[in-house]
Every structure is written in structure tokens, then in C-alpha cells.
Length: 308
Image 1 (tube, rainbow, N blue to C red):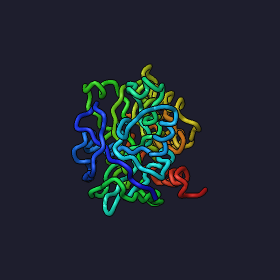
Image 2: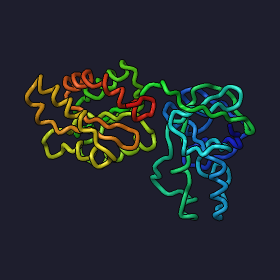
Image 3: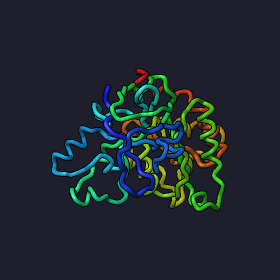
Image 4: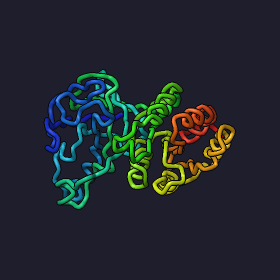
């Protein structure tokens, strides 16, 4: 249990947020009147008051809103909480944690003065799941993520042509559709160029900041020079899970001998499973139908809700 100390908004992006006396939280939007509100997963940002105080002790002169945060709350070490944590604010409003920290693309004024900024590592982001009016002084009640909540997933298509808009991506949308039909909560669907840099950056972001249960990639597992999905996956994983890819290859070999040419792999980064899938829609459907049953047990083990 904690306390809401301040609410800050800005009417335009790129300007410092300033405190207000009350705010209306709107589902699938965020704080009414805030420039960063919208139908996405980073609707309302939170920062711990204790982290601001620690930063002030280093000599920083910062007001509430200076880090771009919407809500300053007391009583929680927010960056240590798991994605899926919920916060009831006041009598009705409720938020769900969707991301820990963020990438800093350009250093802010605070960083230029202090050589550091706490928002990229200590700030968290939420979406509104229940509407209501909130005010400074409101009680904040935290609820841990439900053990039986849906598995969260991301789908990443690797294709130079699809990324340039020269080719319609059919495998990614089909994969997302199958996952949703099987009860998965698909948080992001991305189309990236072949190669390693962008894929590695997004695998790290989705695993570290969004803490997704599983990331599926499609494409880039063949023998061409630009097929580097396997290498990118291996580079970011802490441990490999080779049995998943071996099982898919074995299954696909019953359908076509060309499956022996696939270099797909699977591995684990922190508590996120990353699985490389083939590039064709037909193979995506075949392999997903084959692995989704046993995969649920593995995801439960990673999440800590299942046992060996």
C-alpha cells in the first residue's frame, strides 16, 4: 500500500510536465489532457518518490514532473515489480504495469547537468484498465499479477521486402491470429528487416522492459546471407532451449525434406522464451499447431506457476 503524491501532465510532447490538482483516467487512453496519452501500452508513467529523493540528495534540483513522469507514488520500488502488477488509485481507477524503464534516445537536460537520469531505469509505464478521477493524497493499493493470467507474446517478422512495403507479410498476422485463438495476449506485432541489429535490440526490449512470456519470430532462418535470425537469437539469450527447434524440424521433415535446411533455434532471455519459426504461412501454422500444447507447460515453468 502506498500513496499518490503528485499528478503531472504536459499538453505537448517535448515539454516538461507540471503538477495538477486532479486527473481523469480513461480506459485505453491514459490521463485526459496529457500529450503522451493514447491507445498504446505506455499510457501513464510512474516514478517512485523515494528514487526522486535519492537523486535530490546527489545535488539535483528537480521538481515533480521534471523526469517526464505522470504519477509520483510513495511506498513502492516500482522498477522491481513484475509486469502485470496492478495499482488501484483512489476509489475506482486502476492501472496495469506494462513496461519497466525505457530507452533514452537523447539525453535530457537533467542528464546534461548531473550526468545521470533515473527515468530510463526507475520509471515504469502502465495502461488504464478502470476509469476514475484521481487526486494527490489518494491511497494506492498494489496487487500482484494473477497466476492464471494469459501468456503474453510478441510476433516479429523478419523480411527486407516486407519491411520496405514491397511484400505483404502474411506469416506474422497468421501467427498472431493463431496465438489469440489459443488464449495468448499478443502485445506487439513487428516487421523488421533481415539482419541482426534491429532484431537484437527489440528482443532485448521485449524481454527486459516488457517482460513478455514468449517472443515468436518468423523468417530469416534459411541459408541466405541475410538470414541471421538464429545468430541474433543466440546473441541475446542466456540459455538455449534446442529441443523446441529440433522437434519442429523433426515434425516438418514428415511433410517436406527441405525442413533440414532450416537453422531455426530457441532460447531463454531472463524469463522470456524466444522461438524462431519458419517464414512461410503454411509452415508457421503447422509448427504452431504442433508445439503450442507442450509449450504452455514450459512457459508456466518460466513464469513460476508450473513445476517440473
